[in-house]
Length: 432
Ligand SMILES: *Cc1c(COP(=O)(O)O)cnc(C)c1O
Image 1 (cartoon, helix red, strand yellow):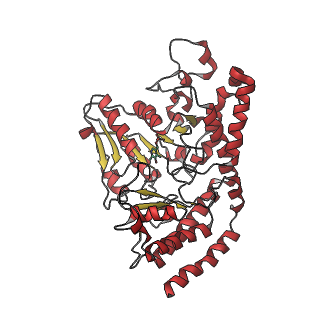
Image 2: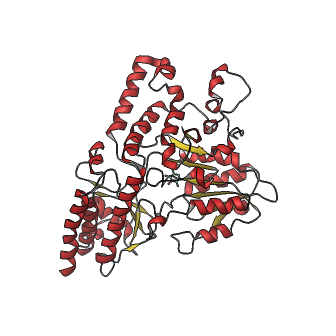
Image 3: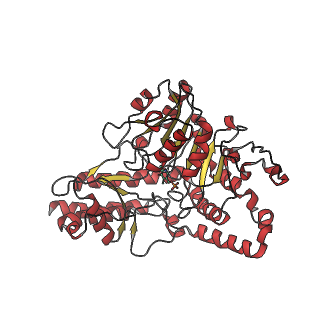
């Protein structure tokens, strides 16, 4: 009784935080799902009205201009990828010409790694980590095999001491003389740990190794200083914290000291822009990150990214990060204080230090995470589940409220108090 009244009384505190929230007005800029408490913006951000409008505008351009849209669109479609890349550059601490909107995440990994992976018989190892997003590991393994090396030997995965987090010191310890490339995530997709990218980049460069980061779980959520840290390359999607819609075009970053290098996977959109339409048969790469584009960009997809980006830039990445940390801190405190003991037994798998975590919280339950996730969905909360025992809760600074964070905690309590999870199947669905 005591316990329940005190979690319930946290509502007042949540409402106070909402009243003081500088970003509160941004919630109206999104299409919220009626009746839902959406906590899955780290997988797919909600639809910003600006994105919807931008897509509609581009459809009108297509209808009215046809092929002329490539030069007469606003902005000209021909320049869209570089323009949107330049607009996004401040989010990652890059110059405008170091970022381009192109392809999709895993494809960009291939485009970049095929260029920056220069194996020799003595030095053929790509260093990644065992907690990495599987798609990245599949892609890295295939890059190793493509060069005639054995992924079992030449794709090295730094281990985790606790199956949740990586110890940067140990990762650095794996940067041995046979390593010729390091590819790591900025934020681990399951536990939400934020790696010290600056320290890892410095250590790699001390050993003469280039380093790239997958920033899918940090772009739009956390400020970066990729150029200052000397990161060689990076890539990220736009549909998570950047709210650009399912399968929307991704971004890639190449540090300007690599400009002029020949991209390993060439295509005509990576050609020097001024001369692309000369249609020469010899490839001349653009002198920017644009060289790593391959094909015509999706202009409808780019419109969505452009519209969505406007909202993020208006709010400011530092304000977004500050509110995100306040929300995740609040949630972790509620779990620790009210939901960590019998019969609840929840545990936080995310590092506590603000500088070591991204935008979501890994909520763990020792036995029933899958079914508790289902019970949350039945109650109108939308989180996601990652095996074996993690429910990811991502309160998004641009559109979630502190009251919603409190509601999630109340739902978790109710689900356990009533043993509601017992109604659900132990078999996981195809997309969770
Ligand atoms: C979401 C995510 C991806 C997604 O890859 P796609 O190619 O866009 O399907 C890749 N890597 C990481 C770390 C991710 O979180």
